[in-house]
Amino acid sequence: MNLEIRAFLFDLDGVITDTAEYHYLSWKQLADEEGLPFTRQDNEALRGVTRRESLRRLLKGRVIDEATAQDWMARKNTYFNASLAQVTPADLLPGVGALLDEAHAAGILCAIASASRNARAVLERLQITDKFAAIGDGHSGVNNKPSADLFVWTAGRLGVYPPQAVVFEDSEAGVDAGLKGGFWTVGLGDAGVERAHLRVPNLEGVRLNWLFEQLQALAGGDS
Ligand code: B16
Ligand code: MG
Image 1: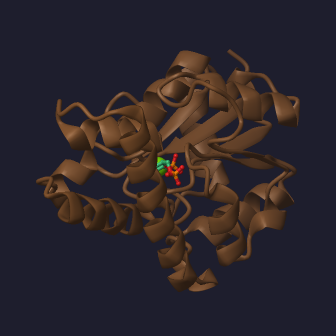
Image 2: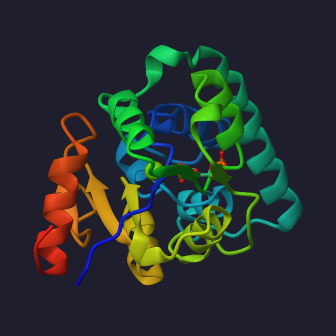
């Protein structure tokens, strides 16, 4: 198969920067206020899924009415937004800047595809909004990860087909979404990303030549 990569679709939290800690502390504050047990380990199951799904998982089967759910999600989001004041350009994860520069120099389109409704605010804090040709976020559609919709929506904004794009993800939901959509997937970290085409600890050391060689080998045929 002839490999033609035209775009990179980056998840935000856990790939570009680590807002997971702020998500955790925000849910933890809410959980403490409401007397709900919630640990760092519990938080791992919230990686990459929407605010609503995060609340459902945090509740562990406990039932609350819709008005309470809205109130709790709003409070968690208030805490999270307050914590974003601490995010600075120094909070880019290792290797992100170099890979973005290399991709731009090679004419590869770069986009964000994040479940977060706060993705634009995070990108502003990092001062990298202008590095992305499209931004898909929690406002971009009804179905979020593990549905493929967000990645398909974002690829459509770029005018590329899924097999022409690589998804970089740190969550199980995100990798599954990328695979369902027919994208190439690179899983970051060591938990939940086993099904990705390629796995790396983070973006440090990920270079275009290496990436294309690996993908070409998987596609079969010479690069
Ligand atoms: P918000 P990603 C995800 O971001 C986070 O990993 C996940 O923990 C969070 O619940 C979700 O965004 C929604 O965030 O409450 O800000 O809309 O990994 O998809 O970039
Ligand atoms: Mg993520």
